[in-house]
Length: 162
Image 1 (cartoon, rainbow, N blue to C red):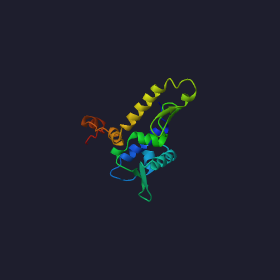
Image 2: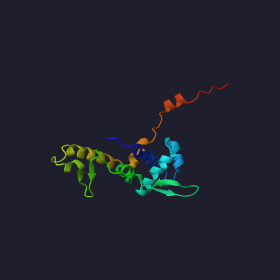
Image 3: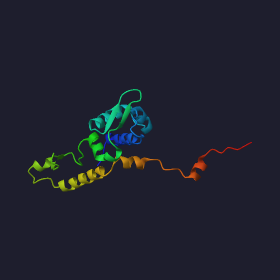
Image 4: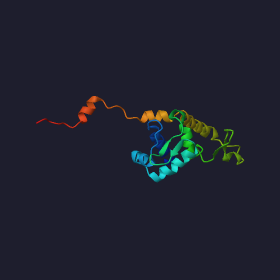
């Protein structure tokens, strides 16, 4: 199952917002530079994330975007669905409001879709993995590891006293 760049860039945007101390807003331009992403694409993605209630914006000289709720309360299924729409492993899958999965091949008179069980399990697995991952976890995982003192000394420029 492949997700588009919407999901990849959107998750990276959310992680960058999650890295901000407190509720400090950050400009999209800063996010674009930090993550090396196209600003115009981020503008499109942040609009979807705002509509889903995951980010808020502040106008003005010190404005920008920030998380709408704590990173610990934002799950990746909410982020990916806000950006990609319904998560479905096959184009023929359609989820009903009650949570049932329908397959467009079920009505073709051949007795139903023979592969529905497999694709339903795939969908459930992906959804469970996304729902079980919070933004807080990703922010923590992406934090730079402390550099061992020996490495820091090895990389430091050598200065000789005269």
